[in-house]
Length: 242
Image (cartoon, rainbow, N blue to C red):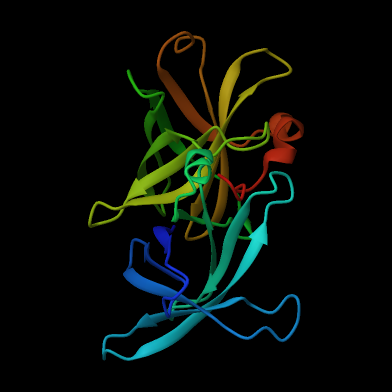
């Protein structure tokens, strides 16, 4: 559950990039400083931050990357602030690239483990404007209120249609997953497939409409259905440009 921004500095600056990373636990200012490469896959940058004592410390590494499908450049970072390592990418929207902007958005990478859906309750409601949804998902271990915001980075068919966001205690939007519009091969009904990152793993659920809901704005969230797996198999995970 991470969000943030990264800005490319002028070439003469000591740090090539500066930015912020937010989570539900911390807000950290970071810098990306060029480092000598020992091999082709060696990191291009050290990620540094200032600790509570005012000392600059190295908290991770970063690589210049290029998307396999899109061909667009992005930055991949592995960071550890004492809670265990995590991965994020810094990407740009199509509009930012066209404007040759120096601004990047930091998004999370999906973790490796899938959490079993088990007993899940939830609801999703289409908003009246901005092609967005508001909803919640809960079980005995967690309770999340979230928003589905249209994905401005979508350039390929398999890219998510929406990003899933929650709010931190300070009100910062935190990206916690992705969602895709889909259609059931069996019934022909439209639904949404959601992948949500939780502290216990990545949770797959579907938002569907029963007979009473069909044609309205409300969807019920149910555990991921095996019958939908073939339709969504290629879409699993948080796309790098999502």
